[in-house]
Length: 314
Image (cartoon, rainbow, N blue to C red; front, side, top):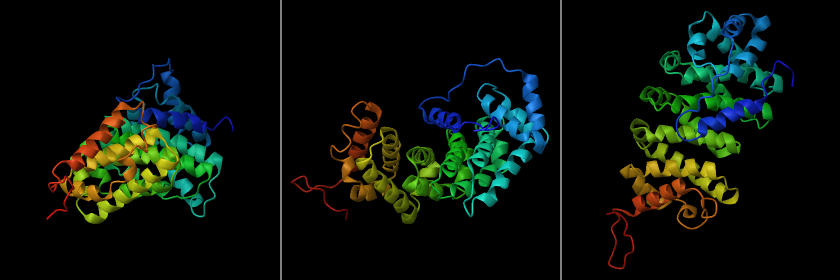
């Protein structure tokens, strides 16, 4: 690790904070020399000074509240960040990405995440279709650490967008391939990648437009249900309370749609109906409540014969 690389752990910790419930975490304002911030932003425009400027600014992104507008409105800065992203494309296929390359581009992605989550710059960020530049990274399948770190940081940008609960974000994402990309990562990514990807799907589902979109066709719903079912099976073997929480919330939200509810009565994994996860969830009252509500939603409205056995719909 050279002095011009950001330790992956710092970006990973930021992802953990993003996944935390409640409002976005605000770091206590450090005494940051604004002149230094302006200097580093200017240095992004020059290839010779850009790498160190990326490192320094990415370190400060949570302690400078107006960094996003400063980045967005300064001349050439966003172009420089996009250049960093595009420069990595040739290393994706064939997969030759090095740790140094990954760390550098992830510093650029961290600054874009800052722009994505700020209310003054979010709309312009979407209007410029900047998230699409990240999708090639989400398509990668290499399991090496540089690629895993690249996918995680890219997911973090999308996660920061959906965490704002803004309708325009969901409307934008539904015009892109983000759902199949998330589903693929949910099936085969690392535990943290799966968690962030499931968080993104959950946020899309919690929006009425997103729920209607996924339940609009059997193909969309069945793809989501199939991946969630595989995840439940995997979680029964390798438990993760945090990942399970997001999976259960996705199922609960799907049960709000009448057609999805009918289908879930047939395909909800048995592990969510029995005591498989009782030990994992023993201290998680929120997820236990969601799970109980899910089971209740699926039982309500079922036609039963006099013996209490559910009858198939007519």
